[in-house]
Image (tube, rainbow, N blue to C red):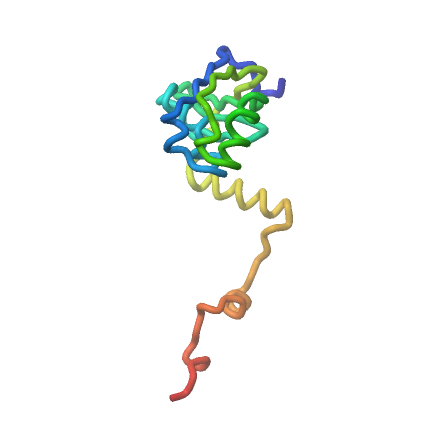
Length: 150
């Protein structure tokens, strides 16, 4: 695996119930039935995210766990739920395996801002703008000389 990646010491079995589906939201990777099942079974789970490629979450052990989404979860929960709603899905149980975990990096807000700025700059997404350029491009800025005369 990668430098900080290692195989998780556990392979959770996720049991998605009707209750999980009842309060889940369609097309929402942060509030789907699988997310609710993981949060119910692992109350210490944080930042749970599910999509058709990956299921990931952090636990109190300061590790981020990532597992490929099992095909039965895609075919029996995600696709039918997103297409037709909870009526189309029956409770199902599946095992998460072949995943990896990595340490969670805790950073203060200044460090996060610096990383975000550096990432945008490296992608060419950030550009310096003068106040005049900003004001010209932003319709909500109105100046006295721009106001209609009465």
